[in-house]
Length: 501
Image 1 (cartoon, rainbow, N blue to C red):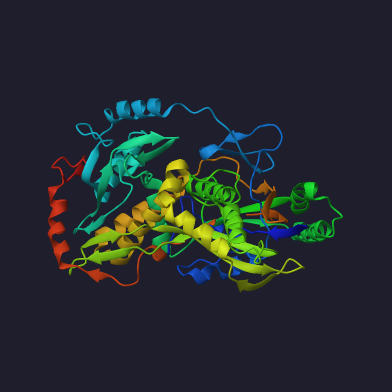
Image 2: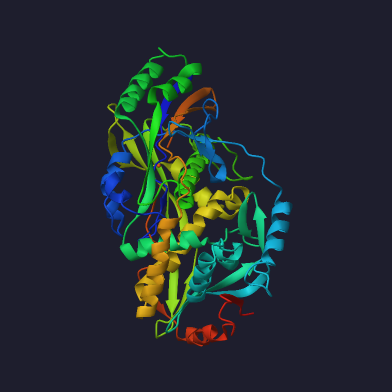
């Protein structure tokens, strides 16, 4: 006997949650999108209410010819109508990229030391980095690679406040280029970009948020409900169900809020959200022994055949802050950060016949997938570096939240304001992504003599900085010894980073 279940899954808000997350090119887009600012999760209430009623796409395959398309980072581009599409590019080899980086490192203003090398503890002076960046700008020169990638810091372990400086420090396991990403060779974490740090500092200073949503049109939702009924009544053959559902939903709207849509951070949020949904639905393979959502469906059916597959559910998956534990010395001048700043989260709601949302329900399949993703985050980052890049936004947000909250002098305030102001300068001047095509997935599974056909469509992202830091600050007097570390700064003021090994 064949059981045909229609599962409309909205893999919606990938929250890059930092409480005060800003973004490069923030300007007034927040007002344009009608999204309220603020540092609390409740600020997204109206947005979430809108998103939770939607059915969103699970993949954004390319449509038509390239026409006047211009290439974006991370393998996406936008056509003249504003449709975001995936593209394949022939990238130079990682070995060649690493060689070029090594050659460039010798011509950096940091001559005498190689920022690509390993370090037990690398320190970065934000005051000196600001001065070095301004000197490059005054000379009409681009920032060096070491500046762009914060001397290879991917995990800030310490934030130190001196009278006139903010110093960041953390281990570096050697820097390499991998699939176009600059990352730590040992941990696989992406090096923190200066523009990402500036964006999160701007968010922390303004108590604003940024992100993106992917929403179907009202007509698309109504069409989807009709198609769902026709599939269940067998008016539409099961073999055509996925194609018919995708056609019914049509194009999805992309909205990037709180930042310019063509900034590196804006594009990364959209691409990471898109890719995560593809992972969940099996468009891209998970690392070995890591379950996607379809695997979770199979597992629950095998464990309990009576439970059957999910039916008429709205599934929301989003990236959010994983509050890090922060310790400080008694003077609150040295802060130690522990924990990963990002995690995947999920929730289910019952989908109503009219496309509206119902009550929240428990779905063991969602828990299996979310737990599998979080428990194997390092494997996933290694296979798909986009998630290492995404995590670097959250790592930046931890630093921004601490620096903003505990800035103790006017020098600190002006330093943070400088970097916040630069967050508006990262626009790439490219076409803005406005829409994406819906594509649905048909998943077939069997339990004994029962065969289940499960039709799935998916699809949204957002960021805020204070959620990256635990509410309670733990005082650790032993951290006082680190107060002397900034005193070891190189005597040459042009040297903005150094190793305290």
